[in-house]
Image (cartoon, rainbow, N blue to C red; front, side, top):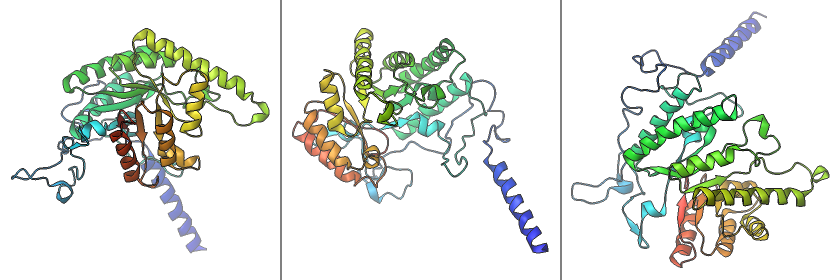
Length: 361
């Protein structure tokens, strides 16, 4: 019985320790007052991280994969030409703000594992500005020219739409200022239409979309993404699919009209349908095929039960003169090297005009 009591005390101690350690960190005690109520942050956000490069030897030879530096590119040489284009033109890597600076590193079974020392435990506008400064230092040290975002990732939601837009405008002005200094701009922006309970049954009619298009355009964004994670149905027993598809098409038609009004050149549709062919046929039916591109996500293809290369082949067949936005995701998605090779070969034949790689290619 005594052993059981000791064991129970041990379990309680570990549970209490886990709960305490799982609490999000705020300002560390040794921060030297850096974490104030202001958006200012003294010094660098990543003080021990140098600029990441593809290294050269003293004789101007490439170290590449032979480099012993853990913070050096082994295969990515931005200036190296392949098939007539520099590598940084083929692979326009984009840092995703929500995963990098708002993600906690947690999973459905555990607590957060990632904490930033500059976080103060709030989601204030001042904190949002601090995160934005950290983002641009991160971009500069990585040597990438693109970033991407949801509106609610970079600025806090307000009590009203007007307050939310005001918060967003304030943070966007800072991003605009930071972009000028280092010539970086968004590969794409989008509205976050899935987290709040109000989007339970879809977010396509939200007025956030127009505002998100405006600020993406204002920052010189290359594209605007429509992520339809909440656009769908649970069962056909209470769904008129034809009517819902008509409504979705009307939304995209309105978006096209608005992008022309504000001078936005190329919004993109994030692929959430079954495959690229299904998406292409939807766009053709509603005469939208020349207004949208597809964002091919290999992880989504895997979840749908088919391969990424199948989606890419369908894309080339249906969008012969269009660009491709590829998110290859993790290495288990049927070989990233095969994906890259397939599209570089297609590009060399003139079938794909541009190849944009978002996040983890």
